[in-house]
Image (cartoon, rainbow, N blue to C red):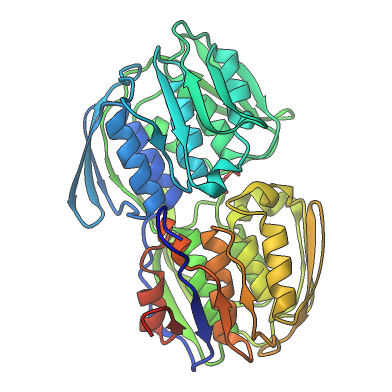
Length: 450
Ligand code: S3P
């Protein structure tokens, strides 16, 4: 369901191989950060390849509300005229971040060390997600948050008028929390130190360095220690956003499980903090090749070529790999159902607090499709049925979660019977062209238009 719309059911059915080239949109994580750091530098940041999904559009809207000028020039091409570190104005209205945990948590960090207040809200999914993980460290800077019970949105954050730098060990593996602390540290005099016990996606660090912040990163026995010197003057940048590996995952995995498929997905960001799914798929025996490996805009990039892989085997996914593929477990669970033998996923508790409880959503939907799935607080085991082995024939609940919707639609392309999702609307948050892109490859998807 879009922010205001009715549910949009959609059905996927087997209709032959997927073939061709899939041009997926820009990286969602990098797109949010490009807009926010553009807003925090003085002058004009020029961005190409920006994801124009609803999550990122909501962040663009928020940056305008804090005083930046954000202009859409052409598809994917945006200019941000920033207000500088410490230059945010107080928004005149509530900031609605829609479905986006990344948007709201990063923006809270970015405003928490300025003497302004802002009230944040979002859709029913976002209003159910915990914000304490961000407001706890922001309180150390002197910011005060008033939200609903359990640290839920709507929430007002009163920024610190005289912030002090902090040293903070992130208690959960979360790039959103680590990034919120770093963004808050920008306007605090002195060195803010963030310690991650497990490394998470490092886009914020890379981009902060690119915008001219002074940043030191050390790998120590304590974990990854990031030291940011506060109150830099950020220099506007020209940024090309790489294509999103988390979106590429869907055409790639759909090709691996659909008989006769051969799909090329060019220009995909393969930052090691994001590429865990592809490593896992190759360990399972997927015919997935990196072609034309190169570097673009400071990020490693390759063209991914995925072919039908009838002999994939289930594996035990190393728990320490979870942060580098945290958004990909739903689609991995689908691939696992088409592999031989069990696939065991452990150390995935964070999936319970994503756009939906993704362990429950995948376990329920796959069982409804005829798979055997066991799950616990922080683990899930999918018993593979082999290529073409998933019966399908079910309607799966999306729970306002784009990745759950896309995962079950991919399952339907290779299952024996069609698979329906109750609501494909949330797909627009991260992958607005999913339906036409998959249809061009040969997928048969039928929404209300059919
Ligand atoms: C993101 C971090 C991850 C991820 C999300 C995007 C980011 O969330 O699930 O989709 O851009 O920083 P957590 O920080 O909660 O792990």
